[in-house]
Amino acid sequence: MRVNPGMSPIAKCCAAALGLWGLIAWGCRATPQQTVLAPKPAKPQSLEEPSRELPGDFSHAIPIYPGAKVDSVRRPKGAMREIFFTSDGKLDPMIEYYRAGLGKGGYQITATLKMAGRKTWSCDFHKGGQQASVMIFPNEKDHSLMTIDLIYEIPSTATAAADPTHEDFDVIGPGEIAQSGPNQSEKRN
Image 1 (cartoon, rainbow, N blue to C red):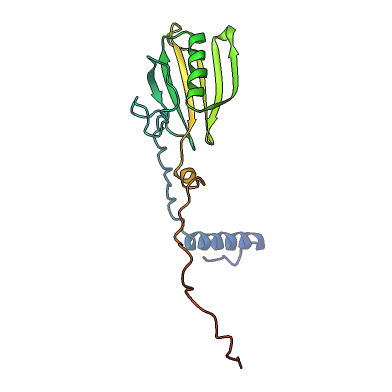
Image 2 (cartoon, one colour):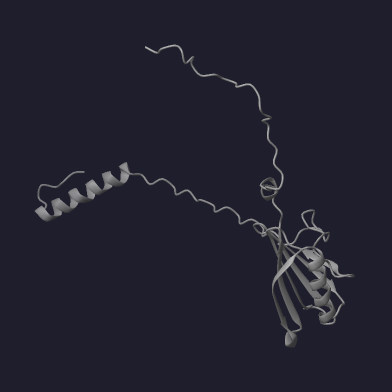
């Protein structure tokens, strides 16, 4: 850039600054910004299993009210699974059925709560470390039916492997000693 000798010092300074600015702008050519696309959110998975059959991990020692139909089976959440049944039974006979059935199945009932005004009953029970609960309440869609909400801990193979009632040992004794120590009569240097 040419500077006119007759220019005032301020004009010369401004011209020089503009020239310098042009050089900086030319040297730092802006690159087009890249657009980063966010990944598409995954489709929310249904909480329900695709089948209305009892899962393979269900313990058949847990009683199921006669005539109750599986309404839905929830996918496991951690170590717990939930099954919803629908039945046309009445609350009090259902309560008696579960109290008797759980006792016959070897389960210990740890807590129960009946709310007669709401026609609901809940029961927590366990057997061999496996926790479970059942709740009975009126069906939301059809108030002439009852919903049975059964939640149980899925049995783990680790728990079964740690069962101390049976032990296998691979050593049968008495037998020969596999390695003997140094001869006692020899002296070490």
